[in-house]
Length: 131
Ligand SMILES: [Zn+2]
Image (tube, rainbow, N blue to C red; front, side, top):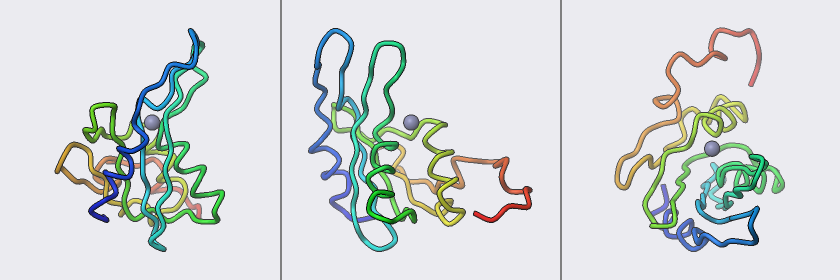
């Protein structure tokens, strides 16, 4: 993991209220790809649960640029502290590529785990599918 990955995410973790329905930037994420590029994303929280996580928007940015192999990822809250990815984001990152199970994730400040460690008994392991 690049040393500045969390610093890059912190730049965007600034919660802003757009109106009575939407708040964004409460969480920001930075992904370092196998090619060494960094993509970022922010969370969007809305009424009626239409928002998404920072990791999701960082993944979209990565895919937009033609990459899907994650080397490392970190998400930070407004306070700048690392937060672990939710179950949905873990699943999303794992479905992009089996290789992503080796991605290093800062789950708390200074605490690192692989995506595989966060996903025991992965339902995809025993399927006869390529990914
Ligand atoms: Zn999530």
